[in-house]
Length: 420
Image (cartoon, rainbow, N blue to C red):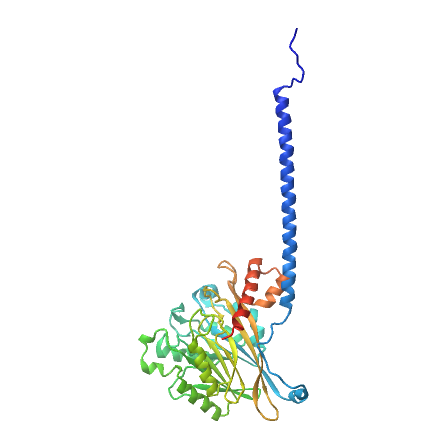
């Protein structure tokens, strides 16, 4: 009898069956994974859109004023006859080595594209001020250690609306007395009003500017110099190095000359410190009691807190310890977070008294587009740029940059409103 062949299958057919079953399982698993991934991506996309929508609502709201004077409603009609001016204030204006590389065009330099993004705020002001923390001499250009920049940089800054600059800073004498005088001359030939350094020791330590009928005195001082050991004592007399006694004399002299409002520009504090030092606070207290109405600081390269102080007459005096850098190519933490102050002054039509009515700030950001970009460094309005991205109006920035702007806005708000 032959052997039974019941349920007999060839090895090939068994292998094919196993392979088919395995393939089906693999397809099923892959399908499940794909569906899960799509589902997760969908949830994340929905969550991301929800987050953007929430952030967009927040960005659509105006940043609250740092200060708003209380004006009785019954005086509103009378107040409409008053003189109101807007003053824009920026921090240190720097020209780093990477900015010099980015701006180089043949034998010339082109800085305009770096500054145009936020020029509406300085151009719209009745007067705009800042600290020009570089020199303009015939020496080799440098954005590190000894600061020296092309005159075209100063021209670009002037073209976006800056009117008054302080040249009292720690690099004022990087190129000696000749460099100081050459810098001042170059700036004045462009059309700047310069305060903080002098052509002769007999010059006043302040300037008096009339803005729409309001006489504002600007005083500027520096804590000292980076190259202190190499500077001669007679050279220092051409720079306003801070001393309380001298500042008190200057404030009094400015008032006697007719100043109705006193603005002091201070180059002070610790580099990279987002909190004002006790020394800064003490100097601010002394200046307010000496008659200063407003103090704006520079040098730390980062933004510091702001506060209102009362003088001996009980009047409001505004102190911004540091506005950061208006423009720079520094890569240290928080160095690309900047602000422009919008300060509103009102002169009473009847009494002639000038008061601080309102202080707002515009957060700005030094955007580094990369060394291969056509324009590497550009100043952008943080709030408006982030709002446009969140609403889908623009894709000119990446999501990573958007997140940096949002983080920066929160950080600035925290720093500015920090209690002393």
